[in-house]
Image 1 (spheres, protein in one colour):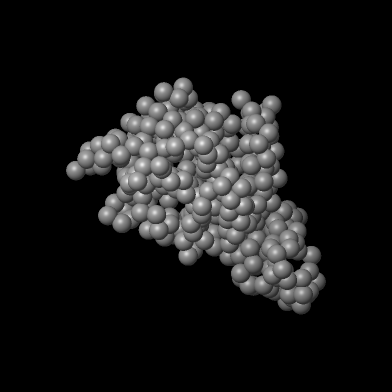
Image 2 (cartoon, rainbow, N blue to C red):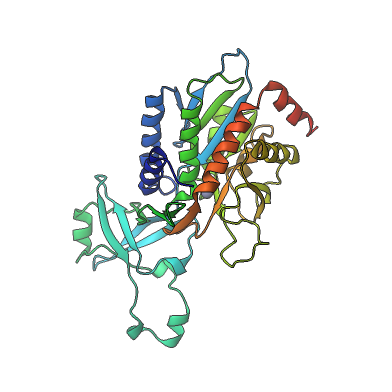
Length: 362
Ligand SMILES: [Zn+2]
C-alpha cells in the first residue's frame, strides 16, 4: 500500500516543518491556511492550539473533538559560548544516544534557518570509559560554524531559539513505509486534515472540531486549554506511539503494519471499555486491521479525559519505530487503517450513541 500524491505532499510538508513545544507556529499557520482553503471557520486557544469547526445542520448536536499535537521534540538555545558554540536545553523526551553528530537546524530571530551539527568527540580522543557512555545533553555542543559569540548573535541566534534534528522525508521499501522526523505527531495532523476534506460536503449529526494542540511533549498543556475551549462530549486523540516489533517477537504489543492501536491502558489514562469496543467494531466494519496496545507513556487523552467534568476520550493511534528521533519508520497501511476506521467511527456517532456511551459510565 502506497500514499496517494496528495497524502505524500502532506506527509512530506508537515513532517519537514519544524515546531518544538511552545514554537508550533509553522504548523499552526499551515493548518490555518488549509482550513481556510477547505472553507471551515477556525477557533484557537491562547496557547496556540488551532481547530477547524464543522457544525451540524442539527440545532443542538453533541460536540466531538479530534486532535493531534503539532509540537515535536527538540531543543532551545540556552547559552552562546565565547568560542561560538551553543548549548541546548532539551524540549520533550530525547535519548542522548541518538544525538551526537546529528545535523541540526536553528531558527533565527528573523525566521531564517541556519544549519549545523551536534558535536561528537572522535574515537581517538576518547578514553575507554568515555566510549561506553553517551554524552549528557547538557554537555553537548551545537556547532553552527561560528568563530565567536558575536558572530552567532549577529547571525540571529538568541536564547530560546528553536533547534531541531534534521530529518528529510523519504518513502522506503517500495513506498510502503515512511522514513522521517516528527511523525509523532504529524501523523495526527495529516489525518485530521484528511478527515476535514473527507467530510467537506457531508452533513453529520455531530459538531466536529478537528485540529492541532500545542505542547503535548512537555505535558499535554494545549490539550487542557483546547478541551476547555471546545467542551467536547467526546474526544478522539490521534497520536503516534512506540512500536515494539523490532526484536522480531510477534507477541510484543505494537507491531508495525499491525493496524490501528486499541490502546487499553497507558501511563495517563485507563481507556473506556465501551469506547474501545466501538473502535474495534468500527475497524472490523471498515475492513482494516487493529491491534491491542499498552504504553507506559501518555497522550493528550490523559489530560482531556479528566478535564471539565470528565470527557469520554479515545486514543486512535498508530505505532512507529524510533519515535522521538529524526529516523522514525512508520507503515502506510497502518495510516490507511487509522483513516478508514476513523471515518467509519465519525459516521456512526450521534446523540443517542454518545448518550449511551456516557450512560455506561454511570
Ligand atoms: Zn505524540
